[in-house]
Image (tube, rainbow, N blue to C red; front, side, top):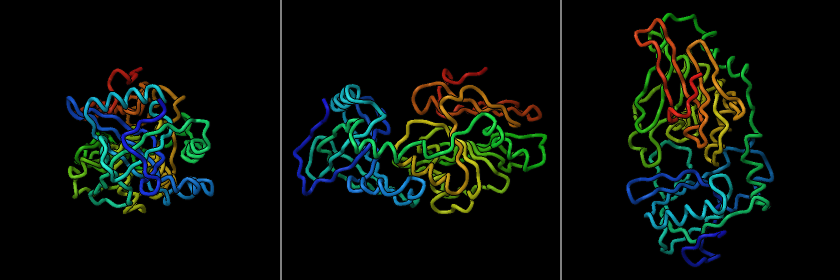
Length: 337
């Protein structure tokens, strides 16, 4: 099975995209949400003329949200198991003509306004073989090879920047900020001044309305920002600042794990790199890195949630001496020693 068909294709009116699978999530007992992330077919030749780091602002990701009942979900699940799951490219054809697979299309419009989806229907989901020239172009352009991989020494040095830049504090702690359905925390001094952020997330997509409109972060004494893993609810605030107030993030060092990610996240990674210094924590770097505030731990699971970074804040002079922040990882995948 190399394609799924839900209706007839009109080559004149239908729209075609190159996408990869972002996520499959169970919404309730009998309903699932399937997310694809991709670009318009017409943009493929543009990728030959430039690189991601040079032209990331010209990349316009499209996010496809499909809510299906159990019957269609199992059909799609079998398709991805037989073809290639969560790592390769697909051709997605959508139209106005009704099929049994409606889709909401969200376009990355570089604003923090509530996204208004375009509602269409999917006609075809077709695998693009890894040896296909289109697949090779996409893999070359959207690749971690464009970025700098760190080693243990470089990551340790980046984590210690906040300590070096500021006088040693008797007490440091973990503060949690209200960003709706998402995660944003910071290691602060005793006066609640952020020294290092761990995730800059927040409510996004269908949880957009949970995001706090009064959020105003302080970066005065912050040199380093750690991203636990590449999920929207852990980087939405980063996206907003990089879009609307990029100067506040000038010259910051970002640390984020090497993971299988889609186009939207590669674009954001390029923005991080352009405003500052993005260091990728490679898959091969396992275990724990210790710093003045505690530890960053590389989780050892297989998917994005369980293969990211976890945090331990160790503050012996504080009333709460030790705190674990697992991000979205299950405890099972967080090595303690």
